[in-house]
Amino acid sequence: MGNILLLDVAHSLFIRYDGLDKVLVVKQNRTGEGNMGTENKLNRYTTEEKSWIMQDWANSAYSIMITTAVFPLYFKSIAESGGLADADSTAYWGYANAAATLVVSLLAPVLGAVADYKGFRNPLFTGFTLAGIFATIGFVFVPAANWLFLLGLYMLSVVGFSGANIFYDGSLMDVTTDERMDRISSAGFGWGYIGSSIPFVIFIFFQLTGILPVSTSGIVKGGFILTAIWWFVFTIPYWKNVKQNYYIEKEPRVMRKSFIRLWETLKNIKEYRQAFLFLLAYFFYIDGVGTIFKMATAIGSDIGLSSNDLIVVMLIVQFVAFPFSILYGRASRRFGNKNMIFVGIVTYIFICIYALQLESLLTFIILALLVGTAQGGVQALSRSLFGQLIPKEQANEFFGFYNIFGKFAAVVGPLLVGLISQLTGNSLDGVFALIILFVIGGILLFFVKVPNLKGEQQSGLF
Image 1 (cartoon, helix red, strand yellow):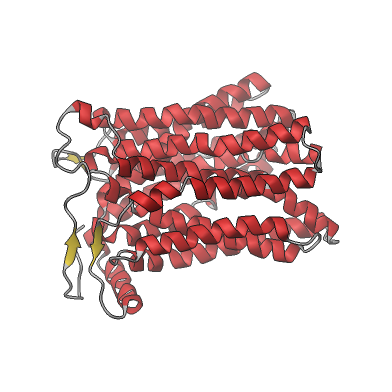
Image 2 (cartoon, helix red, strand yellow):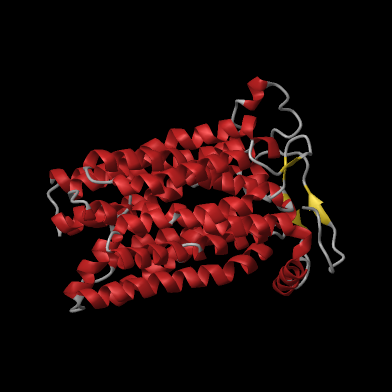
Protein backbone atom coordinates (compact mmCIF):
# COMPACT_ATOMS: atom_id res chain seq x y z
CA MET A 1 0.00 0.00 0.00
CA GLY A 2 2.92 2.33 0.72
CA ASN A 3 4.07 3.09 -2.84
CA ILE A 4 0.53 3.30 -4.16
CA LEU A 5 -0.32 5.64 -1.30
CA LEU A 6 2.50 7.99 -2.21
CA LEU A 7 1.32 8.16 -5.82
CA ASP A 8 -2.28 8.96 -4.96
CA VAL A 9 -1.41 11.25 -2.08
CA ALA A 10 -0.21 13.63 -4.78
CA HIS A 11 -3.84 14.12 -5.84
CA SER A 12 -4.42 16.14 -2.65
CA LEU A 13 -2.54 18.53 -2.99
CA PHE A 14 -29.00 43.37 4.34
CA ILE A 15 -31.69 44.75 5.69
CA ARG A 16 -34.80 43.33 4.03
CA TYR A 17 -37.40 40.86 5.20
CA ASP A 18 -40.45 40.65 2.94
CA GLY A 19 -43.81 39.23 3.83
CA LEU A 20 -43.35 38.24 7.45
CA ASP A 21 -43.74 41.52 9.37
CA LYS A 22 -40.93 40.71 11.77
CA VAL A 23 -38.32 43.08 13.06
CA LEU A 24 -34.75 42.46 12.06
CA VAL A 25 -32.39 42.85 14.97
CA VAL A 26 -28.84 43.99 14.34
CA LYS A 27 -26.43 44.06 17.22
CA GLN A 28 -24.29 47.15 16.75
CA ASN A 29 -21.54 46.70 19.34
CA ARG A 30 -19.28 44.36 17.39
CA THR A 31 -15.70 44.40 18.52
CA GLY A 32 -13.84 46.88 16.38
CA GLU A 33 -16.92 48.58 14.87
CA GLY A 34 -16.50 52.31 14.81
CA ASN A 35 -13.24 52.47 16.73
CA MET A 36 -10.69 51.49 14.11
CA GLY A 37 -9.82 54.87 12.72
CA THR A 38 -6.07 54.62 12.93
CA GLU A 39 -3.79 52.52 10.76
CA ASN A 40 -2.34 50.99 13.90
CA LYS A 41 -5.72 49.61 14.93
CA LEU A 42 -6.48 48.48 11.39
CA ASN A 43 -3.37 46.34 11.49
CA ARG A 44 -4.48 44.43 14.58
CA TYR A 45 -6.70 41.39 14.65
CA THR A 46 -9.48 41.37 17.23
CA THR A 47 -10.09 38.26 19.33
CA GLU A 48 -13.15 37.44 17.23
CA GLU A 49 -11.20 37.82 13.98
CA LYS A 50 -8.36 35.60 15.18
CA SER A 51 -10.81 32.96 16.35
CA TRP A 52 -12.58 33.02 12.99
CA ILE A 53 -9.27 32.71 11.11
CA MET A 54 -8.25 29.82 13.36
CA GLN A 55 -11.31 27.87 12.23
CA ASP A 56 -9.94 27.84 8.66
CA TRP A 57 -6.68 26.52 10.11
CA ALA A 58 -8.68 23.84 11.95
CA ASN A 59 -10.91 22.40 9.26
CA SER A 60 -8.53 22.61 6.30
CA ALA A 61 -6.71 19.54 7.62
CA TYR A 62 -9.81 17.54 6.73
CA SER A 63 -9.81 18.71 3.12
CA ILE A 64 -6.32 17.42 2.35
CA MET A 65 -6.16 14.35 4.60
CA ILE A 66 -9.67 13.00 4.08
CA THR A 67 -11.26 14.46 0.97
CA THR A 68 -8.38 14.20 -1.47
CA ALA A 69 -5.18 12.64 -0.15
CA VAL A 70 -5.12 9.77 2.31
CA PHE A 71 -8.65 8.49 2.82
CA PRO A 72 -9.38 7.71 -0.87
CA LEU A 73 -6.44 5.28 -0.86
CA TYR A 74 -7.52 3.77 2.43
CA PHE A 75 -11.03 3.20 1.12
CA LYS A 76 -9.66 1.53 -2.01
CA SER A 77 -7.59 -0.87 0.10
CA ILE A 78 -10.55 -1.72 2.38
CA ALA A 79 -12.81 -2.24 -0.64
CA GLU A 80 -10.21 -4.51 -2.24
CA SER A 81 -9.97 -6.63 0.90
CA GLY A 82 -13.76 -6.85 0.83
CA GLY A 83 -13.66 -8.40 -2.63
CA LEU A 84 -14.65 -5.30 -4.59
CA ALA A 85 -13.04 -4.84 -8.01
CA ASP A 86 -11.05 -1.64 -8.63
CA ALA A 87 -13.55 -0.33 -11.16
CA ASP A 88 -16.44 -0.96 -8.78
CA SER A 89 -14.74 0.68 -5.80
CA THR A 90 -13.94 3.74 -7.91
CA ALA A 91 -17.55 3.88 -9.05
CA TYR A 92 -18.87 3.65 -5.49
CA TRP A 93 -16.40 6.33 -4.41
CA GLY A 94 -17.79 8.61 -7.10
CA TYR A 95 -21.38 7.83 -6.14
CA ALA A 96 -20.66 8.59 -2.48
CA ASN A 97 -19.09 11.95 -3.26
CA ALA A 98 -21.92 12.86 -5.61
CA ALA A 99 -24.56 11.87 -3.06
CA ALA A 100 -22.91 13.79 -0.22
CA THR A 101 -22.52 16.86 -2.43
CA LEU A 102 -26.16 16.64 -3.48
CA VAL A 103 -27.35 16.38 0.13
CA VAL A 104 -25.33 19.42 1.18
CA SER A 105 -26.41 21.42 -1.87
CA LEU A 106 -30.10 20.72 -1.27
CA LEU A 107 -29.89 21.46 2.45
CA ALA A 108 -27.63 24.52 2.20
CA PRO A 109 -30.18 27.31 1.49
CA VAL A 110 -32.75 25.92 3.94
CA LEU A 111 -30.23 25.41 6.74
CA GLY A 112 -28.81 28.84 6.00
CA ALA A 113 -32.25 30.42 6.29
CA VAL A 114 -32.83 28.66 9.63
CA ALA A 115 -29.38 29.71 10.87
CA ASP A 116 -30.22 33.38 10.31
CA TYR A 117 -32.60 33.24 13.28
CA LYS A 118 -31.22 34.31 16.63
CA GLY A 119 -29.60 31.46 18.53
CA PHE A 120 -29.67 28.90 15.71
CA ARG A 121 -26.43 29.37 13.79
CA ASN A 122 -23.87 28.38 16.39
CA PRO A 123 -25.70 25.19 17.48
CA LEU A 124 -26.03 24.18 13.82
CA PHE A 125 -22.35 24.89 13.26
CA THR A 126 -21.45 22.81 16.31
CA GLY A 127 -23.69 19.93 15.30
CA PHE A 128 -22.28 19.65 11.79
CA THR A 129 -18.70 20.11 13.00
CA LEU A 130 -19.00 17.37 15.62
CA ALA A 131 -20.70 15.07 13.10
CA GLY A 132 -17.72 15.51 10.79
CA ILE A 133 -15.16 15.02 13.56
CA PHE A 134 -16.76 11.91 15.07
CA ALA A 135 -17.32 10.37 11.64
CA THR A 136 -13.61 10.89 10.92
CA ILE A 137 -12.69 9.17 14.19
CA GLY A 138 -15.11 6.41 13.27
CA PHE A 139 -12.99 5.45 10.24
CA VAL A 140 -10.51 3.89 12.65
CA PHE A 141 -13.03 1.47 14.15
CA VAL A 142 -14.61 0.12 10.98
CA PRO A 143 -13.91 -3.63 10.71
CA ALA A 144 -11.62 -4.74 7.91
CA ALA A 145 -13.38 -5.28 4.57
CA ASN A 146 -16.55 -3.47 5.70
CA TRP A 147 -16.23 -0.96 2.89
CA LEU A 148 -19.92 -0.02 2.73
CA PHE A 149 -20.04 1.11 6.37
CA LEU A 150 -16.78 3.00 5.87
CA LEU A 151 -18.23 4.75 2.84
CA GLY A 152 -21.32 5.70 4.83
CA LEU A 153 -19.17 7.27 7.55
CA TYR A 154 -17.23 9.15 4.90
CA MET A 155 -20.45 10.60 3.46
CA LEU A 156 -21.47 11.70 6.96
CA SER A 157 -18.08 13.38 7.44
CA VAL A 158 -18.44 15.24 4.13
CA VAL A 159 -21.91 16.48 5.04
CA GLY A 160 -20.60 17.57 8.45
CA PHE A 161 -17.57 19.35 7.02
CA SER A 162 -19.42 21.06 4.17
CA GLY A 163 -22.44 21.95 6.28
CA ALA A 164 -20.31 23.54 8.98
CA ASN A 165 -18.57 25.65 6.33
CA ILE A 166 -21.89 27.23 5.33
CA PHE A 167 -22.30 28.66 8.83
CA TYR A 168 -18.60 29.46 9.09
CA ASP A 169 -18.62 31.52 5.88
CA GLY A 170 -21.84 33.21 6.98
CA SER A 171 -20.26 34.33 10.25
CA LEU A 172 -17.59 36.44 8.51
CA MET A 173 -19.63 39.62 8.82
CA ASP A 174 -20.23 38.91 12.52
CA VAL A 175 -16.55 39.12 13.42
CA THR A 176 -15.35 42.08 11.38
CA THR A 177 -16.32 45.24 9.53
CA ASP A 178 -16.90 45.72 5.81
CA GLU A 179 -13.58 47.59 5.60
CA ARG A 180 -11.66 44.61 6.99
CA MET A 181 -13.62 41.78 5.42
CA ASP A 182 -11.20 41.19 2.53
CA ARG A 183 -8.23 41.04 4.85
CA ILE A 184 -9.85 38.65 7.33
CA SER A 185 -11.17 36.32 4.64
CA SER A 186 -7.74 36.25 2.98
CA ALA A 187 -6.03 35.54 6.28
CA GLY A 188 -8.42 32.65 6.83
CA PHE A 189 -7.55 31.06 3.50
CA GLY A 190 -3.86 31.77 3.95
CA TRP A 191 -3.57 30.20 7.39
CA GLY A 192 -5.84 27.42 6.19
CA TYR A 193 -3.20 26.39 3.65
CA ILE A 194 -0.63 26.10 6.42
CA GLY A 195 -3.07 24.36 8.74
CA SER A 196 -3.87 21.75 6.12
CA SER A 197 -0.22 21.09 5.33
CA ILE A 198 1.10 20.42 8.84
CA PRO A 199 -0.87 17.20 9.57
CA PHE A 200 -0.19 16.07 6.01
CA VAL A 201 3.56 16.60 6.38
CA ILE A 202 3.54 14.79 9.73
CA PHE A 203 1.73 11.87 8.11
CA ILE A 204 4.13 11.75 5.16
CA PHE A 205 7.12 11.84 7.54
CA PHE A 206 5.96 8.78 9.46
CA GLN A 207 4.89 7.07 6.26
CA LEU A 208 8.29 7.52 4.60
CA THR A 209 10.57 6.94 7.58
CA GLY A 210 8.77 4.00 9.15
CA ILE A 211 10.18 4.97 12.55
CA LEU A 212 7.00 3.90 14.34
CA PRO A 213 6.65 0.16 15.04
CA VAL A 214 3.20 0.02 13.42
CA SER A 215 1.84 -1.13 10.09
CA THR A 216 1.02 1.16 7.18
CA SER A 217 -2.64 0.77 8.07
CA GLY A 218 -1.85 1.86 11.63
CA ILE A 219 -0.10 5.00 10.38
CA VAL A 220 -3.07 5.82 8.16
CA LYS A 221 -5.49 5.41 11.08
CA GLY A 222 -3.21 7.60 13.17
CA GLY A 223 -3.52 10.22 10.44
CA PHE A 224 -7.31 10.11 10.75
CA ILE A 225 -7.12 10.57 14.53
CA LEU A 226 -4.65 13.44 14.11
CA THR A 227 -7.01 15.12 11.64
CA ALA A 228 -9.98 14.84 13.99
CA ILE A 229 -8.03 16.11 17.00
CA TRP A 230 -6.56 18.98 14.97
CA TRP A 231 -10.02 19.94 13.74
CA PHE A 232 -11.56 19.82 17.23
CA VAL A 233 -8.81 21.59 19.20
CA PHE A 234 -8.43 24.53 16.83
CA THR A 235 -12.20 24.99 16.57
CA ILE A 236 -12.39 25.74 20.31
CA PRO A 237 -11.52 29.47 19.88
CA TYR A 238 -14.37 29.81 17.38
CA TRP A 239 -16.82 28.17 19.77
CA LYS A 240 -15.65 30.42 22.57
CA ASN A 241 -15.44 33.81 20.87
CA VAL A 242 -17.57 33.99 17.70
CA LYS A 243 -21.10 35.17 18.42
CA GLN A 244 -24.09 35.72 16.14
CA ASN A 245 -24.29 39.51 16.00
CA TYR A 246 -26.54 39.78 12.94
CA TYR A 247 -29.77 37.83 13.12
CA ILE A 248 -33.52 37.74 12.75
CA GLU A 249 -35.53 37.53 15.95
CA LYS A 250 -36.78 34.04 16.75
CA GLU A 251 -40.43 33.31 15.99
CA PRO A 252 -42.81 30.33 16.04
CA ARG A 253 -42.55 27.74 13.27
CA VAL A 254 -38.98 28.59 12.38
CA MET A 255 -38.66 25.87 9.76
CA ARG A 256 -41.84 26.89 7.95
CA LYS A 257 -40.91 30.57 8.08
CA SER A 258 -37.44 29.71 6.76
CA PHE A 259 -38.97 28.12 3.66
CA ILE A 260 -41.16 31.19 3.21
CA ARG A 261 -38.16 33.49 3.49
CA LEU A 262 -36.25 31.35 1.01
CA TRP A 263 -39.12 31.57 -1.46
CA GLU A 264 -39.36 35.34 -0.93
CA THR A 265 -35.66 35.68 -1.71
CA LEU A 266 -36.00 33.73 -4.96
CA LYS A 267 -39.20 35.55 -5.90
CA ASN A 268 -37.54 38.91 -5.36
CA ILE A 269 -34.27 38.00 -7.02
CA LYS A 270 -34.18 41.42 -8.71
CA GLU A 271 -33.71 42.93 -5.26
CA TYR A 272 -30.42 41.04 -5.02
CA ARG A 273 -29.37 41.33 -8.66
CA GLN A 274 -25.71 42.08 -7.93
CA ALA A 275 -25.33 39.13 -5.55
CA PHE A 276 -26.79 36.64 -8.02
CA LEU A 277 -24.87 38.13 -10.96
CA PHE A 278 -21.72 37.64 -8.91
CA LEU A 279 -22.70 34.02 -8.19
CA LEU A 280 -23.06 33.41 -11.93
CA ALA A 281 -19.59 34.87 -12.56
CA TYR A 282 -18.22 32.89 -9.62
CA PHE A 283 -19.67 29.67 -11.03
CA PHE A 284 -17.53 29.96 -14.15
CA TYR A 285 -14.19 31.24 -12.90
CA ILE A 286 -14.09 29.15 -9.72
CA ASP A 287 -14.78 26.08 -11.88
CA GLY A 288 -11.58 26.87 -13.76
CA VAL A 289 -9.66 27.37 -10.51
CA GLY A 290 -10.83 24.07 -9.06
CA THR A 291 -10.31 22.10 -12.27
CA ILE A 292 -6.69 23.17 -12.65
CA PHE A 293 -5.91 22.11 -9.09
CA LYS A 294 -7.74 18.79 -9.38
CA MET A 295 -6.25 17.90 -12.76
CA ALA A 296 -2.70 19.03 -11.97
CA THR A 297 -1.34 15.72 -10.72
CA ALA A 298 -2.89 13.76 -13.59
CA ILE A 299 -1.23 16.14 -16.03
CA GLY A 300 2.05 15.83 -14.13
CA SER A 301 1.85 12.06 -14.54
CA ASP A 302 1.21 12.51 -18.26
CA ILE A 303 4.51 14.36 -18.68
CA GLY A 304 6.40 11.69 -16.72
CA LEU A 305 6.76 13.10 -13.21
CA SER A 306 7.26 10.66 -10.33
CA SER A 307 4.97 10.36 -7.31
CA ASN A 308 7.58 12.03 -5.09
CA ASP A 309 7.87 14.92 -7.56
CA LEU A 310 4.11 15.40 -7.45
CA ILE A 311 4.00 15.37 -3.66
CA VAL A 312 6.67 18.06 -3.47
CA VAL A 313 4.92 20.19 -6.08
CA MET A 314 1.58 19.95 -4.29
CA LEU A 315 3.20 21.09 -1.05
CA ILE A 316 4.79 23.99 -2.94
CA VAL A 317 1.31 25.14 -3.95
CA GLN A 318 0.12 24.99 -0.33
CA PHE A 319 3.00 27.03 1.07
CA VAL A 320 3.12 29.59 -1.76
CA ALA A 321 -0.63 30.13 -1.49
CA PHE A 322 -0.25 31.19 2.16
CA PRO A 323 1.63 34.49 1.71
CA PHE A 324 -0.14 35.34 -1.54
CA SER A 325 -3.57 34.90 0.06
CA ILE A 326 -2.51 37.46 2.67
CA LEU A 327 -1.04 39.71 -0.03
CA TYR A 328 -4.28 39.68 -2.03
CA GLY A 329 -6.16 40.75 1.08
CA ARG A 330 -3.82 43.66 1.71
CA ALA A 331 -3.75 44.72 -1.94
CA SER A 332 -7.54 44.78 -2.04
CA ARG A 333 -7.48 47.71 0.39
CA ARG A 334 -5.81 49.81 -2.28
CA PHE A 335 -7.12 48.35 -5.53
CA GLY A 336 -10.45 46.82 -4.46
CA ASN A 337 -11.41 43.18 -4.08
CA LYS A 338 -13.09 43.00 -7.47
CA ASN A 339 -9.99 44.24 -9.28
CA MET A 340 -7.78 41.81 -7.38
CA ILE A 341 -10.05 38.96 -8.45
CA PHE A 342 -9.50 40.18 -12.02
CA VAL A 343 -5.75 39.94 -11.37
CA GLY A 344 -6.25 36.34 -10.31
CA ILE A 345 -8.38 35.56 -13.37
CA VAL A 346 -5.74 37.03 -15.69
CA THR A 347 -3.10 34.96 -13.89
CA TYR A 348 -5.14 31.82 -14.50
CA ILE A 349 -5.55 32.67 -18.18
CA PHE A 350 -1.76 32.91 -18.40
CA ILE A 351 -1.51 29.57 -16.57
CA CYS A 352 -3.77 27.96 -19.19
CA ILE A 353 -1.54 29.30 -21.95
CA TYR A 354 1.67 28.33 -20.16
CA ALA A 355 0.34 24.79 -19.67
CA LEU A 356 0.94 24.17 -23.37
CA GLN A 357 4.69 24.40 -22.63
CA LEU A 358 4.78 21.74 -19.90
CA GLU A 359 7.47 19.17 -20.58
CA SER A 360 9.64 18.79 -17.46
CA LEU A 361 9.70 19.03 -13.67
CA LEU A 362 10.99 22.61 -13.85
CA THR A 363 8.13 23.81 -16.06
CA PHE A 364 5.64 22.03 -13.81
CA ILE A 365 7.08 23.70 -10.70
CA ILE A 366 6.74 27.08 -12.41
CA LEU A 367 3.11 26.25 -13.15
CA ALA A 368 2.59 25.28 -9.50
CA LEU A 369 4.13 28.55 -8.32
CA LEU A 370 1.77 30.51 -10.58
CA VAL A 371 -1.22 28.59 -9.25
CA GLY A 372 -0.08 29.24 -5.69
CA THR A 373 0.09 32.99 -6.30
CA ALA A 374 -3.56 33.23 -7.37
CA GLN A 375 -5.55 30.33 -5.94
CA GLY A 376 -6.02 31.43 -2.33
CA GLY A 377 -6.47 35.09 -3.18
CA VAL A 378 -9.25 34.44 -5.68
CA GLN A 379 -11.07 32.14 -3.27
CA ALA A 380 -10.71 34.47 -0.30
CA LEU A 381 -11.74 37.68 -2.03
CA SER A 382 -14.68 35.95 -3.70
CA ARG A 383 -15.98 35.06 -0.25
CA SER A 384 -15.54 38.56 1.15
CA LEU A 385 -16.88 40.30 -1.97
CA PHE A 386 -20.03 38.20 -1.79
CA GLY A 387 -20.31 39.06 1.89
CA GLN A 388 -20.40 42.75 0.96
CA LEU A 389 -23.21 42.21 -1.56
CA ILE A 390 -25.71 40.46 0.67
CA PRO A 391 -27.97 41.56 3.55
CA LYS A 392 -26.09 40.66 6.70
CA GLU A 393 -29.18 39.39 8.51
CA GLN A 394 -29.59 36.77 5.76
CA ALA A 395 -25.91 35.92 5.47
CA ASN A 396 -26.29 32.21 6.18
CA GLU A 397 -29.13 31.85 3.69
CA PHE A 398 -27.14 33.58 0.96
CA PHE A 399 -23.99 31.62 1.72
CA GLY A 400 -26.14 28.54 1.24
CA PHE A 401 -26.59 29.65 -2.37
CA TYR A 402 -22.87 30.42 -2.53
CA ASN A 403 -22.20 26.84 -1.46
CA ILE A 404 -24.47 25.45 -4.19
CA PHE A 405 -22.78 27.44 -6.95
CA GLY A 406 -19.37 26.40 -5.67
CA LYS A 407 -20.31 22.71 -5.49
CA PHE A 408 -21.89 22.45 -8.92
CA ALA A 409 -19.11 24.51 -10.48
CA ALA A 410 -16.96 21.38 -10.26
CA VAL A 411 -18.77 19.85 -13.23
CA VAL A 412 -18.15 21.90 -16.37
CA GLY A 413 -14.36 22.24 -16.13
CA PRO A 414 -13.46 18.54 -15.83
CA LEU A 415 -15.90 17.71 -18.64
CA LEU A 416 -14.33 20.38 -20.85
CA VAL A 417 -10.80 19.13 -20.15
CA GLY A 418 -11.84 15.55 -20.83
CA LEU A 419 -13.63 16.36 -24.07
CA ILE A 420 -10.86 18.50 -25.56
CA SER A 421 -8.18 16.05 -24.42
CA GLN A 422 -9.95 13.20 -26.20
CA LEU A 423 -10.54 15.21 -29.35
CA THR A 424 -6.92 16.35 -29.64
CA GLY A 425 -5.15 13.47 -27.91
CA ASN A 426 -3.30 15.94 -25.64
CA SER A 427 -4.36 16.70 -22.06
CA LEU A 428 -2.54 20.04 -22.17
CA ASP A 429 -4.98 21.22 -24.84
CA GLY A 430 -7.75 20.47 -22.36
CA VAL A 431 -6.18 22.78 -19.79
CA PHE A 432 -5.80 25.49 -22.44
CA ALA A 433 -9.54 25.23 -23.16
CA LEU A 434 -10.30 26.32 -19.58
CA ILE A 435 -9.59 29.87 -20.74
CA ILE A 436 -13.24 29.90 -21.85
CA LEU A 437 -14.43 29.61 -18.24
CA PHE A 438 -12.17 32.40 -17.01
CA VAL A 439 -13.19 34.72 -19.85
CA ILE A 440 -16.91 34.16 -19.26
CA GLY A 441 -16.48 34.56 -15.51
CA GLY A 442 -14.42 37.71 -15.98
CA ILE A 443 -16.95 39.30 -18.33
CA LEU A 444 -19.82 38.63 -15.92
CA LEU A 445 -17.77 39.90 -12.98
CA PHE A 446 -17.10 43.13 -14.88
CA PHE A 447 -20.80 44.00 -14.66
CA VAL A 448 -21.08 43.33 -10.92
CA LYS A 449 -21.37 46.62 -9.05
CA VAL A 450 -19.56 46.44 -5.74
CA PRO A 451 -19.96 49.28 -3.24
CA ASN A 452 -16.60 50.48 -1.98
CA LEU A 453 -15.92 51.98 1.42
CA LYS A 454 -17.10 55.41 0.29
CA GLY A 455 -20.41 54.13 -1.05
CA GLU A 456 -19.40 54.47 -4.71
CA GLN A 457 -19.62 51.66 -7.23
CA GLN A 458 -16.85 49.61 -8.77
CA SER A 459 -17.81 48.52 -12.27
CA GLY A 460 -14.61 48.33 -14.28
CA LEU A 461 -11.05 47.16 -14.23
CA PHE A 462 -8.89 49.24 -11.87
